Length: 421
Image 1 (cartoon, rainbow, N blue to C red):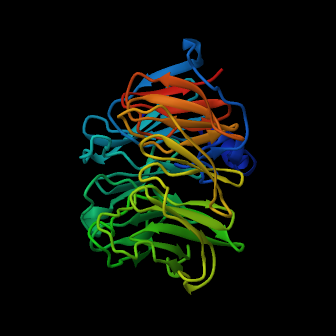
Image 2 (image 1 turned 135 degrees about the vertical axis):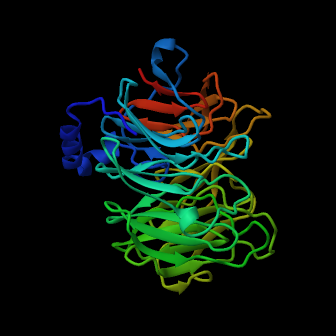
């Protein structure tokens, strides 16, 4: 069910659609890693600390525990969250008021201490909202919270065989919402019509790997490659590019586990910068850059560089210009040159037994990195590493932070918080 609070909502949707092209980079955060899919906000000014209580502009109690990152479109803040055992999508305005909340089927609770049934983040194109849950529920809603369609992928195709909780978020192409299901046996990529939910295509994506290597929690990326759109997918020890019209594989890059190590599960997602995709693998021990493009097996021709001495297991790296910023699971921070893979500098946040599960954010030259115990660190990373502040949120933080219009959104275990000047 849903409740609508805004009388002028339809006008708001029309306006947001009309100005989508020019405002996305500045005012919107339409998906998990932001408008550029690299964890960065390239415009605006953001606080370096919020020790002054007045900087916490509002704090809203959430009805259940989830780990998804908010999506933002104009004055709609969208979040997945369980409500009394049901999967749900919630919409807030920029004052922290609830616009609507829509339930979508029974919740499948998390198994990991830092997991939930609402790990995947919602995605929006400014007209629709799409959400995916551990239970297998996939749904499309309009901006008033009305359900356009829903389907359960586990009931329809295959049961979840992941060791832990579903982590991949849906991605959008021009016509479709696409979900990557990568687990042991029966992995696939599927596309559904945005408006009707009709299945447009489904392609198998199975690779034989050592134990757990075929399981992935990573999120695909929809990008342009040589002027043509492609869906880039990381998991099962392969980076693949798929055609958005039918899902066929255009090229694939392997060779990520030649020693055939067990338990090299993919958790952190790949990140695309220009014509390169950087892949974290090896349970946080390795990084590789792959040049986009080509056809068929490009393993021998498109590997640009490989690092066997650094990487991240859970947090997905962020991009700042021609630099890759990596926050490792125990708080080490490393800046690499994207083109060469060479380390430009490295440092670390204060040592602590708690680890980093959220992926870092870069906004206005500052790095925002939440630790699982709720401490959010801010560092200046424009030229080198300079720790600016430590901010205690008072609750666990697993979701990645969002930077929009000079404000930060931080989703904790119990509350959604908005921070600004």
